[in-house]
Length: 144
Image (cartoon, rainbow, N blue to C red; front, side, top):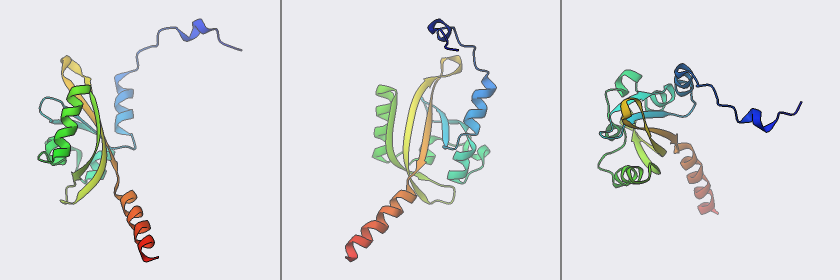
């Protein structure tokens, strides 16, 4: 049976908050939610903890500047761009718990949360494997 177009225009039922939380927690991509004003990390998912090597409780005591070098001009530019247009992407180095630097592609988007507090969700994509593969290809080319 083909649905009439009017059936698609019905208001959607609100999605329970618990479903959003489950989706966030179980996402395969590492996500960090922070307060825009000061960068305080207020929520992380399992994938973020695993990628960065921190337990969730420890990440919740940190600031985005602790994970991404706050003095790095790339980080500063990304934050300025995000403030100006509401979203930004960039290639930054994240610092893992063991001190190692991890090249990541970052996407960060501002949204308004509870009590009209501006928050940002920042998604990290580990670029280290792609960089290793490219270096291997480049090395093979140089040997020819």
